[in-house]
Amino acid sequence: MDRELLEKYADFVVKVGVNVQPRQTFLIRCPVEAAFFARACARAGYEAGAKEVIVRYEDDQLARLKYEKTPEEVLAGGHEYELRSWLDYAEDPDGCCLLAIHASDPEVFAGLDAGKLNRVSLARRRFMQPWNDYTMKDRVQWCVAALPTPAWATRVFPGLDGEEAVEKLWPVIFDVCRVTGGDPVGEWKAHVARTAARRDRLNELGLESLHITSSNGTDLVVGLAEENLWEGAAGLAENGVEFIANVPTEEVFTAPHCRRTEGVVKSTKPYVYNGQIIRDFSVTFREGRAVEWSAGENGELLTRMLTSDEGAARLGEIALVPASSPINRSGLLFFNTLFDENAACHIAFGDSYPGTTRGGTALSRAELDGRGMNHSAIHEDVMIGAADTTVTGRTRDGREVLIFRDGEWAF
Image 1 (cartoon, rainbow, N blue to C red):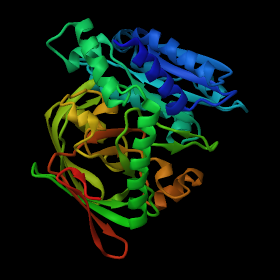
Image 2: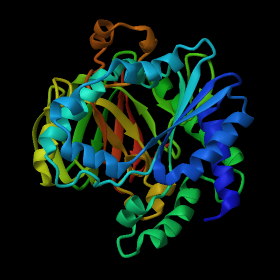
Image 3: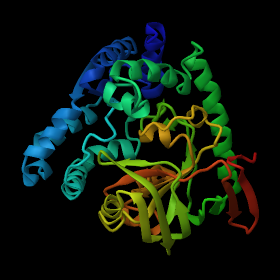
Image 4: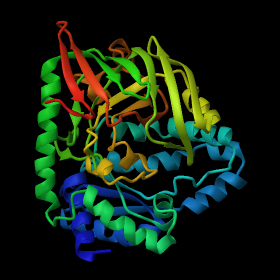
């Protein structure tokens, strides 16, 4: 691992991705194996003016042990101090910002009771919803980034031992995150500008629906939410500070209308849900709802996901990603949604982002529902784009516009 590139990566993620502001409290969630990276990010945070850096470590193996040995009612329960420990920072007059460092074993919960995992996960998400709203509604700056750990790296490179796999994954991450050239800030400024231009073009078109087709059998019409907005690359927090939510990111995305999706969609990459992998799935929609589905592996898990609650079988996001993205060009399957969703066009089952409809972060739940924005305890991105994907848009004034041809932007 190149230490100089590591420092540049940490600096970029903190000072541009999160965009830590003076006097803010900087929160970091990090796997225990990545403590060295948390320290580098903490240093960068203090250099940016953070008044305090709080690091919360996570441990995959302890999490698995806890799920195995702890009664479900205890796992699903929540203590007020857990929630308050996050909200107290968010409610600080000086504000807070968040970096989540992802490096989980994609199959950490393989073999455990899928039903128990799903019920506990949903209960925990509902309990933590007041804090989760701070990121879902962009009330704070937040960023998700990743780095290799042995458990994850050996899934990407199964023929290597842990340390060899980590050393092989590091340069890939540096490359797809635009760090390898040594000027991540400059490269990201150019990338954000290109992405913003496509986002703005889509907003200018005034699209009411997208028709997505691929030779694998995908033939899906996705109606878009009323007054939908396309977003991409950089976001704007409630305090007016720009941030990059995902590093890497290649997507331009918006909100589907939760009652206006029709047709069939096929997955093009496996999906990791609650620490287990779903492969080769197909879903049929009618009037916005998934009504039939199947999977080549872990079909029962797909069923649990889509029946989690009333909104789980409807769409909360549609994202366009070119097949030429750096993640896809790597030729690797990362078994990590942060990377794999940026290799292909994708949809998300479950909750929609309020910011993807005009003025949405200030609207009530009923007002969002009236615009067709979906509501659910889950938000699960699944990859559907292929090298031959075609996307045609239909505008509100009845015109058809080619958006994607052979997996690439048509403009």
